[in-house]
Length: 322
Image (cartoon, rainbow, N blue to C red; front, side, top):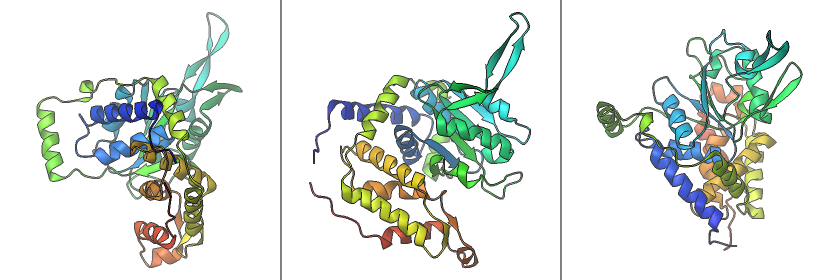
């Protein structure tokens, strides 16, 4: 297997480092989260961030949109947000006598859907077509979203006031679910110092273009995957479906998502081929929001992370030759 990166792969690595450097100006102490969001973007997926308010979810999306030179829109999802707020609507232009399409918030490059689990099921579903197909249909007319198209959705932990669980079909559209968490003591001190010196998103510089992101995704897709790695992913999926504490295991769409994240991980680690470690690195973030535990697990108070660790431990790691 080839181990030397070609020119396109080197460009993706250099581009990724520039993006990470810019995002770190305002997102302090969360380097791994920045990397994982970038991996999801390179893999061509959408990101779900589940966390309490105030830990920097919106700032992260703003910083990335600026570093990536992307058009950005944000919509705060509340119970009164309508599907047309997401997709747009047509309105009669009295001067021309024609109906004109007015874009919804989702018609942008990077769409931040803030607190998505606070809105109605109908509005959540309106976002589904946009995320899955990259287009919206309004009054029988289809409009394509700009390329690249990225959705970063945030949701508060289930049980918070006014929240409702997203349906499985919607959760499955996100390539990963991430949690930012509270900063460490050192990171919070650094954050306070940066705020004192007015370090904000305005300090983030555009370092790549939309076209470069599209080309980078093609490069990631061409990362080599050997048959044993394909089989490893499939066996992990099967183990999730057969686990005694899981009611709903990893879907075929989920295995494809895991493959895409595996390829992106391999390239950002400086390889033009995937290894099992790339699979296990992405496994929890890709799988955690796609499985549903059964009543036996809930009665035993079995932790989800523990179950995912059991699944990884139950599948033999293949050996990959050089």
